[in-house]
Amino acid sequence: MTDAMDRPLAGILLRLCSGVLFTGMMVCVKVVSTEVPLGQTVFFRSAFALLPIVIFMIWRHEFPRALATRRPAGHLLRSGLGAAAMFASFAAVARLPVAEATLLAQLAPVAMAVGGVFLLGERFTRHRAAALALVLGGVAALVVPDLGNGEQAGRLPGYGLGILAALLTAGALVTVRRISRTETPASIAFYFVLVTALAGLATWPLGWVGVSGTTLSLLILAGLFGGAAHICMTLALRFAEVSRLAPFEYVALIWPVLADLLIFGLPLSPGFLVALPLVLGGAGLAALEGRRFRWRLRR
Image (tube, rainbow, N blue to C red; front, top):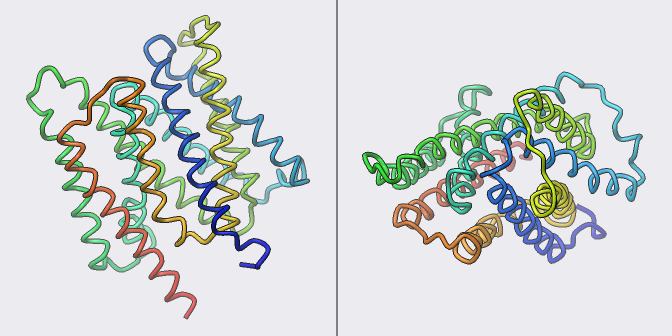
């Protein structure tokens, strides 16, 4: 990394900003989930995310040049997995507190680490085994208290959808790792939101609702927040190494917790408090394993 781009403080601030924006997006999605169909929400989130992404590409003199691609099939696979993950994630946050839905998203790094064993023939190391054990314990701590609890039975599909979203996200990230050898981050982001917007639009015949006023504003904000969050994350990774940003991945969970407490008036469940260190510990071990693997490759 060059001195011009080695600006860790800027990278950290941008990572924190992306966490706030992502939480803002999830809050908007949760608020409208009671009256707006899932596919319609996905469409607005993706369509209006195009605006900040295209402006960002124009600012960097990458539009439309960066949209040229040599791997359309790779983009389609990545975007399809990402679109499915967004549908599952939004369905999960409609049924769960924002903090719990966000915590389940932290399963993605562990799923990537374990998936590397089966898909890429990587070794099943002690770090990966420990990461898997921790996240399984965390998921159990989150889910088991609601089993047999009639009042909380509606949350169980939310947990399943959150786990599914994390697995799909892991698959999308593996695909990104492959196509990023020839494709730019701008093109990957652009085609993802474009395909996801089209997937959301395809649900129109299933029945959309008329929206205006506050609901329309929240749908538009969800898209703007989502697009801006992606830009902040992209810039953060340009200004600081991943290892420097890793601790602040966990700080990003503060904002969903505050949103649940201050906006939705939802208390933190005992299961969440037990699951939090377990899932974050597993995600941390998975990230450590990834850094060790890259270090061995450099040697």
